[in-house]
Length: 188
Ligand SMILES: Cc1cc2nc3c(=O)[nH]c(=O)nc-3n(C[C@H](O)[C@H](O)[C@H](O)COP(=O)(O)O)c2cc1C
Image (cartoon, rainbow, N blue to C red; front, side):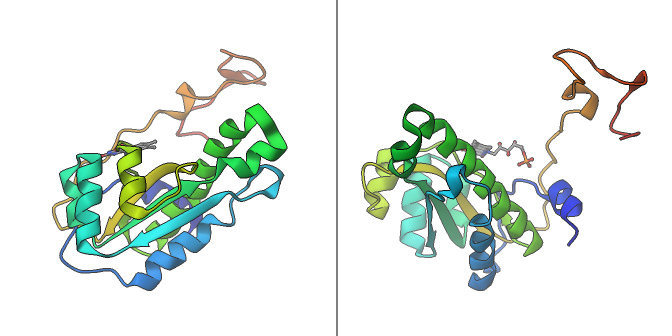
């Protein structure tokens, strides 16, 4: 799949079919995460892949999001900020969140390429997740990702901002590129 295609096609899916994805595809998606940029090239994440139905049910409860229980796999993304704290002191937490986002986007795009359906779940009781999975206290649970195949009943696609509304040239607020050309999503 072409990169731009995967970027544009990726979307959040909450309805999963009964068909269980091949676990190798999930591993391939996780493998993509480790190629992301990281401050000082210190990759500080671990991923937990879960297929046990009872554990998935507990994760649904910890997030109070019913649809999670229908997932065939859940991938939990965890960061160890202490790794970065030694090098970057008070900037560590900012760097850790940023590089987690980069790694997660790699994972999401690779999942898309593998034909997997998933969604970023960021709302949950973190301590509950740590207890369920035995994650050490000092770790940060960034998010988790219920995985399956999309059902035939497709959800609506999220509206995205227009390019002209997110791009400035040269300084804050300037929407015109030199020479005086107004950039839109259509002529980019
Ligand atoms: C940091 C973050 C946290 C999110 N947490 C949740 C969540 O707890 N539950 C949920 O249903 N979706 C969650 N989402 C998914 C967003 O709702 C979704 O990405 C957004 O509506 C855009 O849709 P799209 O992913 O199809 O482009 C989260 C997304 C991000 C980036």
